[in-house]
Image 1 (cartoon, rainbow, N blue to C red):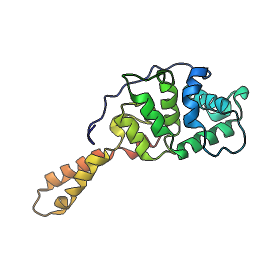
Image 2 (image 1 turned 90 degrees about the vertical axis):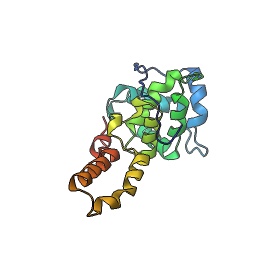
Image 3 (image 1 turned 180 degrees about the vertical axis):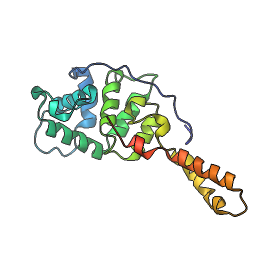
Image 4 (image 1 turned 45 degrees about the vertical axis):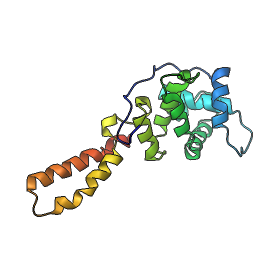
Length: 191
C-alpha cells in the first residue's frame, strides 16, 4: 500500500455488549497480557469491563459492579494504549479476507480505540483511517490530517511568500494546506 493510498472505509456491525467467549479470550489474551504483570488481576474481567464501556458509550462510573471498579478498568485501558498494543489489534481486525476469528472482536476493539483516541498517538488514529476502520475514528475521516500530503504542500510554502505569485494563487495554496492538515478541533473531541 502506498503512502497516499488508503482502504475504503467500512463499518463493523454494532452489537450489544456480551462477555468475551473462551475462543475470543484465547485470541486476545496473549496480546493484552503485560510482560511484567504487577498485582494479580482477572484480565478477562478487566477486558470485559473495557469492552462494556466501549460498546455502551456510557460514563465510566456506570460500569456494573460485577465487572470491577471503573478506575481500574480505565487505568488498564490507558496502560494498554501506552504499551502500544492497539496498532497490532487494529491490524488484526482490519483484514477482510480471513480474520481468523477476529471478526467478533472488531466492533469492540474499534470502539475501545475510539474511546481512548485522545490519549493515543496521532499515528494510531491515522493508521485506523488508512486501514478503513471508521468505527475506530474519533471524528469523520475528512476531518483528520493527511500528513504525507501535507508535507508535500509544506515544500511549496516558500512559493507562497514569493512576490511573483498572484495573491489569489497564494490564498488558494494556504487554503489547501489548511484543508490537508485536518480540523484539529473536530478530531480531538470524542464522544
